[in-house]
Length: 226
Ligand code: E4P
Image (cartoon, rainbow, N blue to C red; front, side, top):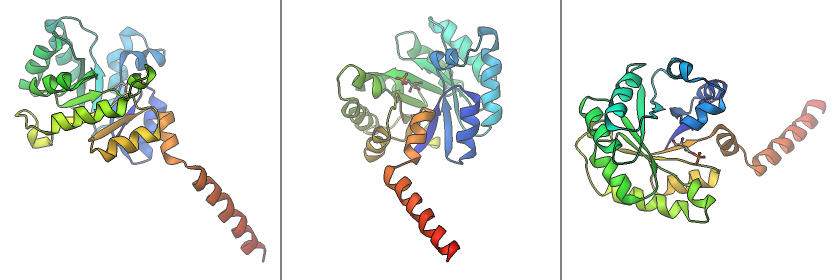
């Protein structure tokens, strides 16, 4: 499974990139707002992310509401850098926009996916990536992992003409909150997990690893002082 980072914070992206594990970046309007960014700086900020992550996909989300505006914004975002992926929320307006952008060779990440039919429609419209959300189901007491598994099974049952040569469409497990979500996504064969930096750090650690490190260090101290 590939790890993406779910953030627009440049320091977090730099640090995760330095770990050598990063296969992509996803952003959304809330994550950009969290950086304190202004509207006028948005495209420049996306360019900075692409500068840090030159060879991996960087999702920049459109906030347009009509098909025409999504296509226009999608083309503008795609022109920022070759590794930009245009993120569109699943809706009636975004399906034709996705189809148009895909036929122009522009990669789309269809986001806010909460059902298998939404995911199947996104794949049929030419989405390169499909992002089912896990954590938000759990926020309202539903089983996000079960929902994710349904999406993965349904999408992987079929082949789609658009991005087959690059192995698309790929499923991005989104709205990830815990290492357990990552494990569950990998067990069912989801292609990617996009993980916020705090959760990514939790994936590195384990209490038994920390305990083991402390006891190795203490025993080595004995060797040094022997
Ligand atoms: C997907 O790409 C979204 O940016 C993200 O995973 C949403 O996560 P949240 O539910 O924690 O906001």
